[in-house]
Image (cartoon, rainbow, N blue to C red; front, side):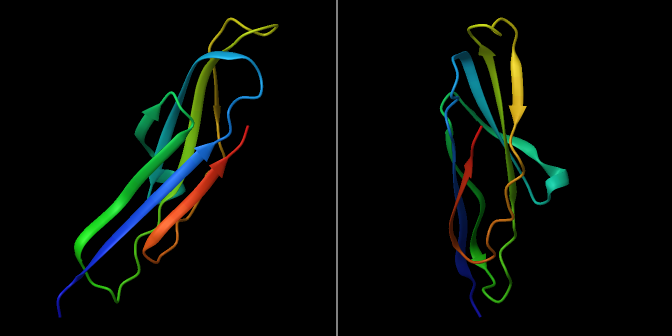
Length: 109
């Protein structure tokens, strides 16, 4: 029996900071478990598309692997508390579905 194509594509959007900031960077972490997250993308905009799994010869009788995500925002707040670099992390999102398709995840401040 020949394999099938399988692809997991994840879109993730973060809400923008609701306070004045400068020099903001978003880092996307992904892993097969919450304990194995590793940096996969960095951006100055709060939106990501990531393809953690692509197989052109996948056995359709097996479930697709699941993935977990986390976002770290590093920024310099301006205004009253401005001056030093701050960093915040999102909660861990996941797991992604075990069927082919697109998962959409959202992070808010």
